[in-house]
Length: 255
Image (cartoon, rainbow, N blue to C red; front, side, top):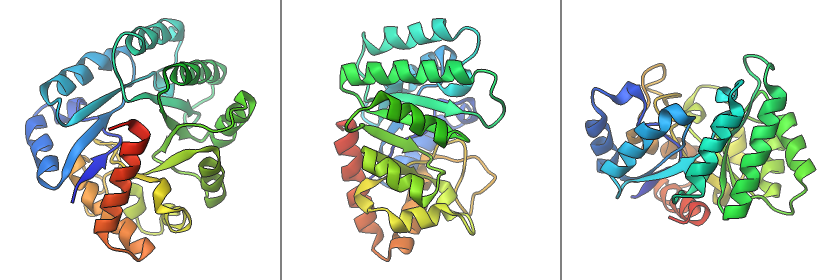
C-alpha cells in the first residue's frame, strides 16, 4: 500500500535528533510522499533544506500561517509572494484563520488569507486551509469571494458534519488526521458521512498523534493508523482507503 501524508512539519525542531530515521520509518510503511506546509519566513529555510535532501519524498507549499500574522504581516506576505512567483510549489499553505487564542489580528488575518487565495487562483494552485475557531469567518470570506468552485483542502478538519458538507459542496477536500482515532471524536461522524473521494490523510506532525501515541510526538509513519481507523468507520478495507486517498492527493496537488 502507498500513502500520502498531505500535511506534516518534519522540518520542525522536534525532529532534529532523528529526522532521517523518521523519514525512513515513513517510507518503510508506504508513506512515500509527504507534503510540507510553510509557517512563515523563519521556517522556510528549514523546509527547503529538507525538501532538497529528499526530493523524491517531499513536496513543498508556501504560505503564511494565520498565527504568524502580526504587525509585520505585509513584510511576511511579500516573502510568500517572492517564493510563490519564483519557484515551484504544490499548494499555497498553510493559510487560513485562527481565532482560538485571541482576535487581535482578526482583520489582518482576513486580508492575508484573501490575498494568498488570490495568488493561488492566479497560479492555479490549491490551498491548504488552517481553520481554528473560525469556520463562520472563513466560510463568510469564501462566500464574499464568490467563486463557483474552490480548489484545496480544509486541513485538520474540525468542523461539524454540516460544515463538512458545505466545504465539500464548495469543492474542498477534508484533511483527516490523528484526531479521528480519539475516543468519542466527532470527526468520526464526519468521516462516516462524507464520501471517501473527498478525504485526504494527514498527520500534522509533530502535532496531534493518533492513538496509541496520543500526547507524544507525531510523525508521518503513523499515517497507516489513521487509514485503519477511517477504514473501520466506513466498513471497508484499509487498502481501499490507501488507494483512494492517494488518488485524491494526486488529483488535488498534481503529484
